[in-house]
Image 1 (cartoon, rainbow, N blue to C red):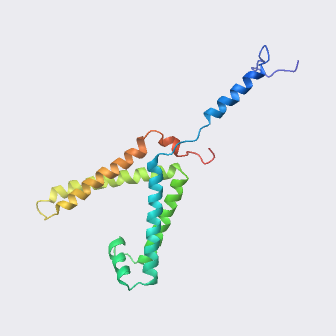
Image 2 (cartoon, rainbow, N blue to C red):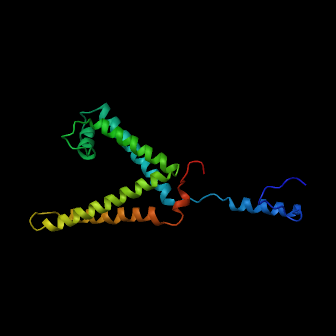
Image 3 (spheres, one colour):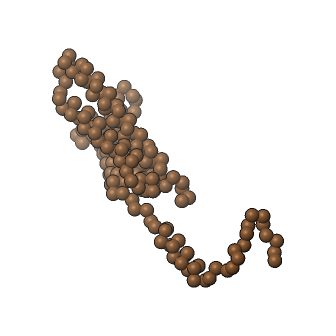
Length: 182
């Protein structure tokens, strides 16, 4: 009899070969593929759509900067303050890169992309709530459009729902990989 390792006790008899097959069948059943919630896939495709849209905007502004379409895009979609010396074309390329990176991370289901989106939507919900409270405190002194109040209220609800969905929806931890090797 070979020398046994301390604490390692051999079984009194050999296991029948029939049971080995049952164990391997159970292991195959337990290794199931994680079902990805539909909204995760839709949000990733939304990011791809936004990246494509900003790429087209950058190309329009770059190819024909004096055209009516370029002037419209710069005046309506370039949210960088005019005091900042940044080219609208560069801003659109940066937004293309950021949305493309975010979409790639969502398709890979990286946990950092989930937490980033969760915290950003929570931030925007709280920011909109603060703006709404500030707006209500000065609403009588200023002629504020009721549309702005509605937009802020919708922003609070939508961003709050996104944050809650990413934080508490069942199966969200399984859908996003915590480690790259798993």
